[in-house]
Image (cartoon, rainbow, N blue to C red; front, side, top):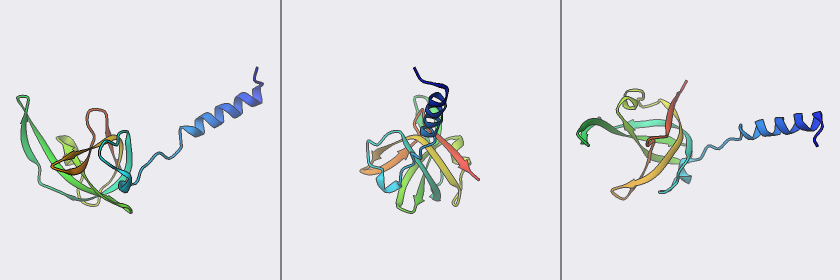
Length: 118
């Protein structure tokens, strides 16, 4: 059985594991990569376009994001489009990389999140 000091050490070590930096570099992102966490700057954003998906009209825009290692297309949907502009730094969590027209792109999908960094 663990004593009080051992329990404290175990709790501290466990809490530190949760703070391990899991961020990736854009150069590491390949099609099929899931659970993507990356911080990057919006370098450019295309004008939004409207698509009809399942009877609903949705807005989509491609943004180019960059870090020190490279660039990738970030697909933005609906309200997320209005949250960014060139120069905005974003923190993406739980994104995934797929391909569209033979080009890798990062998307948030249903479970990903995008946080605007101040």
